[in-house]
Image (cartoon, rainbow, N blue to C red; front, side, top):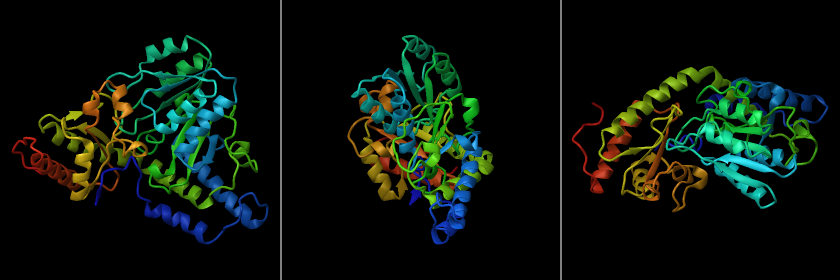
Length: 384
């Protein structure tokens, strides 16, 4: 199987597994314990905290370890909202469900929840956002750094600066961006930023919320006061160690990974542009170097996904957390894409282990399948 669905998850890097193994087999103590074994576990967590912070230009004390991106986003949205009186909450129209759903839950409890419109490329309109903030009483703004479906990158630093002027807390979901493009928490001006381990070749079950210490956060989990009273519960030491190692490798290899992935994505985009009728989404915007979303008008994504799966290719129609439905992508709808076209969307998200041969094989299979579905294909040989 050729994996072209790395925005859903990434394989565990063998070097990360090696870093985790001693903590799966050996020091098993509770990191809150004061004896030698407990201190060893605590030291491993603090090393990982520094590694995660270094990946994204944060201070180690900014890092709150969580169980993953979903918990990080929930802690940011609910935690910041519940620490303040009810008011207005804003989120971009292209956010992940784990931001959208907490917003909706708060909306049912007295907060006023509003979306921030995006243009046809999926970018938030900064001027319109500023006008929206002028209404006052905005407690929290949430906007992802890069979209998980289209790969489109937002101008987070500009949006966060505007939010700060309005005295609103700004949360940036960097789950898909960290490890793929340079991310700098301090330079972004965000108050809060979410990360996830399994998107950067680390283990599932670990994530982080970067939080400005001055921002009030109501914990979602109360318990033993771990993570500086912001996230109760005994820490998952092996997963956190793996997250730290994955962050360290991502930081050291970021430039090489970006160059490799952009070359593959551009090769794929070039092949797709030569096929008749293919529609590329967000193609005129700055995007993640590994992500490309396209549609073949009239060919439902579920049909094409199933056929590609049988051919040995793993791709998706969009967010893995929202796949399996017959509804058009809310991200594409927000961009003004007609529902009938949005239902044909296919996302390819590349990983560091993919090759040019993978791209050429995928395009060859795609051409063959579309030809079998009655879509006319030009006589261009893949791989030339």
